[in-house]
Length: 358
Length: 196
Image 1 (cartoon, rainbow over the protein chains, first blue to last red):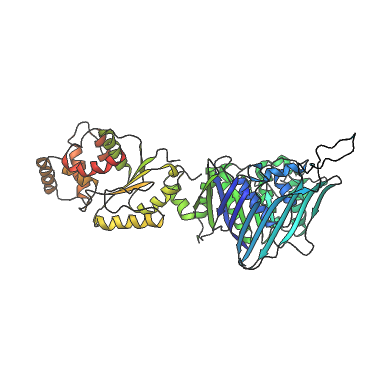
Image 2: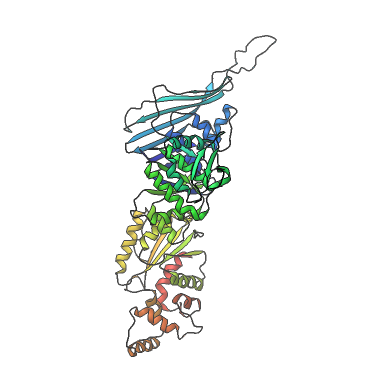
């Protein structure tokens, strides 16, 4: 299944945004705060459409830890609860339409004014003066025909005294799988994914890929305490932390693609950790691995080297397929967003003229 | 990397044309126009598409497109450029040298003069004293091997007689080797006055 179009309303940076014509590899560029990460997050939320926990996760990815229900404001446009978040997606192969609405939920409490302890009388004018937000509600539908009557399902995520309470529909099992690769380097997720990959002996193909960054790598093994070790031909195995950012980053991306087979991998700031000289090889590895595991890639970058590296890799392909898109998000005052789309031909032509595309 | 920095842009075929129009604008005290090199005529129309995608294009209010007719009827080239503009969703000028009233306002000029076959070199040569041109032609007659691109060769020959010596039409413009006040530049002058 491939995501083709997305329409977003009232989410993060976006009052309204439509992106169409996604392909297998999709790269987002734009100035700081243009909404690249927000767009990646919207895609991620919609892939796990029944799981409101993802709304917390995307804030965690940004280093925001929620400690009260009011923190859900961060995902709403202008931090304003008044307008519900709406995300619509269209998939192909097979066709599927997804709609997601996110709105705040309110605790059923009444705060009374004019309450007097001495008289213990409640003034007749007393009324609720404030509603206490206690979480969010996901309302979602999945259909094969856009015009069919919607079968709406509901999930909720609420902060209660006893903790965080998630309710998801029992009769719904998510068939899509997506992984969000953050720009910062963390190994816990990698360890879990690598564990399964080593059991399935798929790590051998990754070793070949990792040799593009360090050709001393012979083998990879897991240790206790989430430790990942490399055999680089010396007497002792070396922890991955010693190997450098490029190895960690490539391992993160490759394990994500492998585990998201037939799904989606979303990579924020894809160039992070890589020397520019390895970027063409990186693209070749990512492209081929994504093709092998039938994974659709959505990534953001600030780096022109990353973009030209894609061009360099792609131009050497024997069969140039129309399976790449680059989108530049231009953000203007008053919530105006303008999206510029490049296919490979127009990207190649612009780069040939040395015209900026970011 | 090149971005669009100015709100008025003129797209031309190559570096020589960039230098020529830089001087032409200066000569008529027109400033604030960014001249864009399309790198040849082969991909002229696809370069229009690419240009409209370039950061900063959203601020463009005036865009001129200049290319050579070579051996093609200027009207056919005009229609071809208009077809590309239509495909991109922009309004199209109704005739050569006229600018649309839309935003961006778009105008097209086909060298040498919107009606004849030829290139920028032909326009410039027409501004040169006819006696000198006769002499240059005589020189070529004396030579056994005749150049393929006759007007480009004649420009080189003419520039070889100018002081200071330069080796291209555009640099010749920078050194005032072309008389922009000559009547042959009048139509081009009217076109560029739209940028004022």
